[in-house]
Picture 1 (cartoon, rainbow, N blue to C red):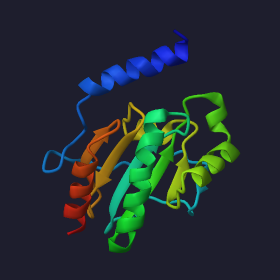
Picture 2 (tube, rainbow, N blue to C red; picture 1 turned 120 degrees about the vertical axis):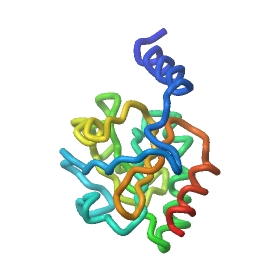
Picture 3 (spheres, helix red, strand yellow; picture 1 turned 90 degrees about the horizontal axis):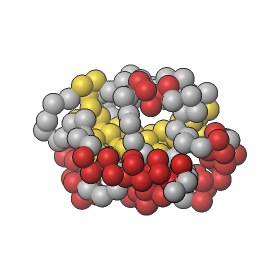
Picture 4 (cartoon, rainbow, N blue to C red; picture 1 turned 180 degrees about the horizontal axis):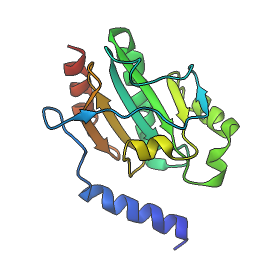
Length: 170
């Protein structure tokens, strides 16, 4: 098995055992800031502090990850459906492979998947590390006070994520 394939297989296996950071109604912590971002796509630079008062979904992804690609239609749909009610979606594109560092490749992926929300290009893993993230894809939800109240690793749980968005939006 190719080393990249082996690494993805190991990540996939560990996803089943990975405990989420938090669940709706469970413990929470303040959402970290976006740090070390040199390129913002579809947006001016954002900060968690400036987004207080809104519900924020942060989606860690990379365009070469098939699991990420499978989740993107849901994230795009939530952005379109709930942005007028106060949901802000921020995609944090953190590359796994060398070609995923290229901004033009990320732009093409954004167009291909119909992404209209802000995308932070996290080539140095600074935001990834600040958030203590470990897997692609991972979605986090922060409430209006900036507290992380939900996370989910991998594909699935789409109904649970949407119910949590609805609850947080009131």
